[in-house]
Image 1 (tube, rainbow, N blue to C red):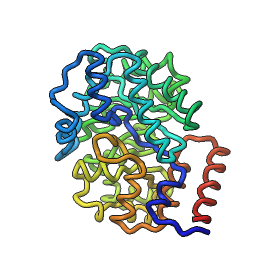
Image 2 (cartoon, rainbow, N blue to C red):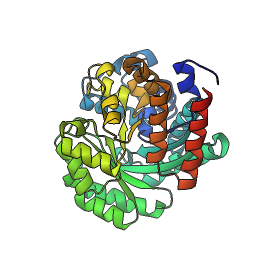
Image 3 (cartoon, rainbow, N blue to C red):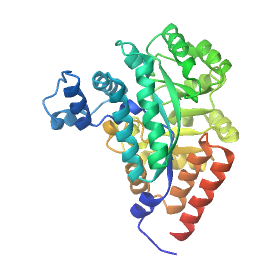
Image 4 (tube, rainbow, N blue to C red):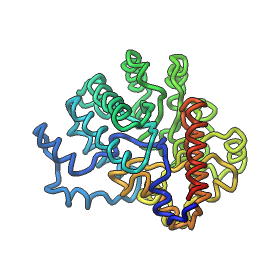
Length: 339
């Protein structure tokens, strides 16, 4: 039994990521490269200047720059390169399974076809499975600041690619855009066989989490920090083992928490919530999976046992087959015992 540092322990443990926006992995270097290739102007003069702009006071400020960055993505190859860069990055961090979001409306609203977007992303994911051994599921998110009609149109465009898409989600500006706004389109998505998830309780109230569960029939809540404001909700989430896909560095950057020392993860674990760690939009929030684990381990003084529990939670919360889950969970347990 080796007694490696918590840093080495985190680096080596096999992980899965369940809350990741592929457009949020757009590193400044790649953004400039693709912008140049497509003759698109970026309103920043250098990679450094762009990185300096990655400092946000809230979700909306981040979204403004996120959508601006997405503007340079035009060709299928761009979406491929974006996804491929992410997969290579997380492969180095021992991530073995990903369930990632993409936002078709961000692109179709500016005239890029749905086919272009999904083909680029999907082919990279397939290559990642083949060459890097990273299994995957794809989640199509509706933008909640747009209307339900736009979401219905996007669902329509997705139907030919049903085999490629496992679930539908809901993201973008939360305040003032409750899950109830999308009840009908989520019902339709379920009729078509999609799993449903939704961002709720990041900046929005606990009430939005109830709506996501009761009206959108979600199997996972993305973020969900605000569930702690409502004891009855906490009990429901814990009893049903509805996973929360929590994103520590994102929470810090978007001022959902002011200090990682106050992060609710330990409280969630105490309350028997199936809480998981994810990176959300790592290019913008200063860290991928290992950085998220490392930063909370340091801030909250987490033990190897707690880290192992969080990693196991992610595999339990994933959409891998039961056999796959069993296999991964025993690998993680063995890793823990040896280190």
